[in-house]
Length: 505
Image (cartoon, rainbow, N blue to C red; front, side, top):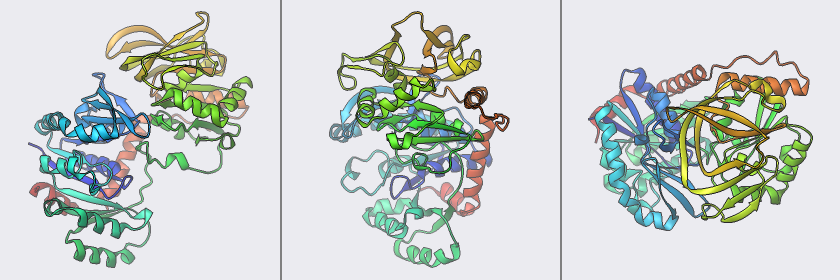
């Protein structure tokens, strides 16, 4: 059986996911077989495993940090919000149902056996499991049916480390208040406090730490500084959306859709020297970029309507009319077509007109496509991305809609040579002039794809692309995980951490 330890936070975005990833890397470095686990995740950033099962990307990041293959066992329940009150519920990587928040709250304890089945398989295979909680564990109106915080800690017999975000302020009140709202059995589970995202002189903080320990009777395991690491983060609270600064040599604008999903598709472009990648949600923010990307979304039709109403659609059409490139991924690809049809009410229902930049029709089906894919861009690719012809691509598909061309003479984007590990030859995506669309998440992740894309944008802009160096994405990720682990290791009591892990509850 594995040793277990759990990271909970006083609120969303307290840093649970990154701390979990950092501990996974630390335990890996120290010679343990370690796996992450989150019983229930709510996110629109998801991933398809080699078995064709869907899981949250946060646990994929944590698995990468642990040096293991991502498995749906690490995230048995995934909630993907479809609107403000409902979510698609995914259990063991497959769609279980669409539920309102109220219905899911009533029924979620029914899923506990599936959660424990997944956990037990990891428990038998690994030396250490690092569990992550969700949101705040002290939401007193939700605790009765909890399946991801203290209830999961008790089922796993996992001691809890409680993390607070000092960068937002009020960290002592949030930690003490959370402890106050725990019952006695829950308080006994908490074995250490983590102060996260600290900037400043720790000696000034120390009196507060001493007083906090007197109040809650739990030792402070460490004060983790604000770590400047480049690691994929959760969609709902990411700081990437709000970054401001001077625009670099190449300006790429990603439309920040209300229900944006899988924005991690574009993180690799942020790493290319000279490139600025911005998330924009208004015409005023869009300005005059070198490339517009329309990302994936959990509700294509409603997000297209949002762009239509706020003027972004008209601005994108004007950009394309000026022969400047537009690239749509997944839901963004669907928007670029001429017709969107939803006969089964998967999204908004009915039919609506698309942007008309690609001659394509999308019909939303009842079944979801979930595959890992490999292939290459096709020869004869149109427009300024012609140099991508023949370049290898790798990624995954997650979509309810099926898109077909309305013009057999129109250019296709890529050929898939492997689908879910099996040989294939299937055309996917479209290109028309400088407009491109694809269902493949991660299409830019290959080093050669990112470099060729940015070089083409430089050529079109008439600027020197000599500054653009090759980027080894895999090596870069490993470096960032090591930096994260070192930042945590240097600022927590490692001896106490291992004592907590060994003693358990």
